[in-house]
Image: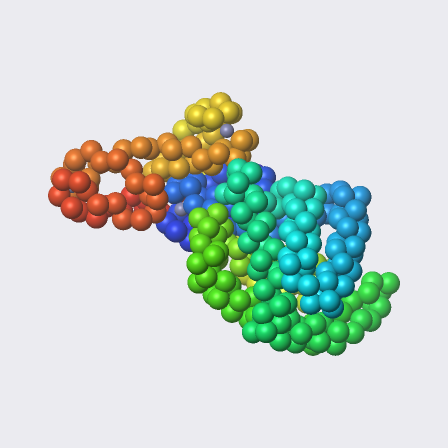
Amino acid sequence: MKIKKFSCSQCGAPKINPYTLPYIICDFCGAFTDIDFSVGMEAWNKDPKRTNKYNQAKIHFENKLAEQLGKNDKAAYQETQYKYWDVYYDAFPEYLPPSINTDEKYSAYLEVCAISSTDAVFDPKWSAKAGEQALLQKAVTYDVVDGKTVANSDAFFKLAHFYIAYVKASFIDFYNQAKFSIMQEILPEDVHLKMKLSMFVQAWIPYLREEDVRQLLLLTNFNNEYIEVKQDNGNRQACQFCSKEIFVPNGSYKVNCEACHKINNVQIIFHCSSCGMENKTPDNPALPATCINCGTKNKLIKPELG
Ligand SMILES: [Zn+2]
Ligand SMILES: [Zn+2]
Ligand SMILES: [Zn+2]
């Protein structure tokens, strides 16, 4: 079986276990570290009926939002945004980040989605940008090539460059605000950025020339290479939550179960490399762990082990 080649942004380890959701969990430190754009795309294309139904609902929401924006009704706009995101994740549960695994976190996350989407159009700092983006989008003209409607390359890439820069800037602003602090825990900034960009890429791919698709994937870093899964250095054991078999690579501390999407703590102690004292594994094994006896900072995950 082939998977995309990833290395964990937290601990540097390679991805070992195959996955079924677009979200990539590190097999060594358990961090939610990346997304696989093509798996997201498969989910989008899996059931055209579902996607059509969602697109219909989206048009309804867009009309309603435009109306509420026209009336400058911020509260109603935010409420509609909340409902829209609920419909989105109801239609595509595969897209819900795995870290959002309780009803509480789900509502908190939708709240953040609704507030940030509302700020994006009501906060003058960002609404000017959104206006600029709308103009660039309007400037994209279309040609019919071999029966396929495709966007004009230059105009599209002007829009794409603008959008990427705009999203990056808004994320820096967003993650610095105290009211969004829950996001640090449920959706790390770099992964969230990839999610947002993947939605843009996904929406545009059907309207792009093949060459432009390639360029866009390069530009957004979604053009990962494939590698063969090598599950030889490690052992198989039962998931501590659902008992399905999981593969635990040697040197791993936390492994996500692809059946129940829960993270197994597979190594709860480590021995200090300097004095040999037994220590408890910290919550985040990607960070250096200080020995309780001698104070040595131990690097727990050695990426070359993978
Ligand atoms: Zn990791
Ligand atoms: Zn499980
Ligand atoms: Zn020690």
